[in-house]
Length: 292
Image 1 (tube, rainbow, N blue to C red):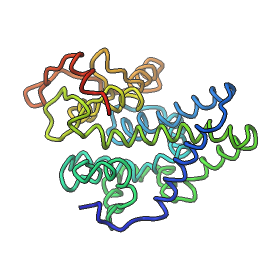
Image 2 (image 1 turned 90 degrees about the horizontal axis):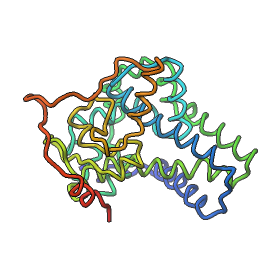
Image 3 (image 1 turned 30 degrees about the vertical axis):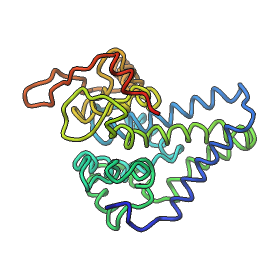
């Protein structure tokens, strides 16, 4: 269906160049002095995607301070994770049509399409549809501004140029583009691998093909426990068992303790009207989550 839509060459080139910069960075000499900046940007960008764009802005799993929202919105722009209006609209539509022919990034259309190519072959009118699903997000002034591409890229350019002038090209590549390479592919893997039966396990009997994947859960700040998320979309925690390591959940918990977040939707017991748990053992999980 979607994989036959018009190919957006500009977006394709941008995505490939951004990832190539990360790959080139990995081929250069790493210096320990890069590590604090690299980790800071990785955490800022990662949490801006998982905590802000996803668990807060899309699903309203909690409320938080205005200055913190603004900080995280800019973090998503620094990492070019996707403008908030489009990101939220696309993801809400995914939940509505998950793993049907209308799901814009389902593996039903093939792994490459589910992983990245859906960003390049969106059908005509899909952006306008996303805006309708994210009408509440468009009321936020800075999210509305970020719909303009030339404004949205400014935080990224400021950070990139600052790193270039202070650390040189190699420092810029390691501190910014290597984290972006990892973050992009981990985020995309939630859409692709975490909807493929051979690469995960299910804790809930949902109507889609969502799977939990331990390794993507680690790399994507807890987003890889995707079946848990589809069972309880508003829940601020995706990792529900003690061994399902969910960095974003822990950060939200800390925010709540310090009064930075409130009205947090924490996990609840399964009820007859909700998807019922499927029994799995840690041994089976370890085997089923290995990605070839």
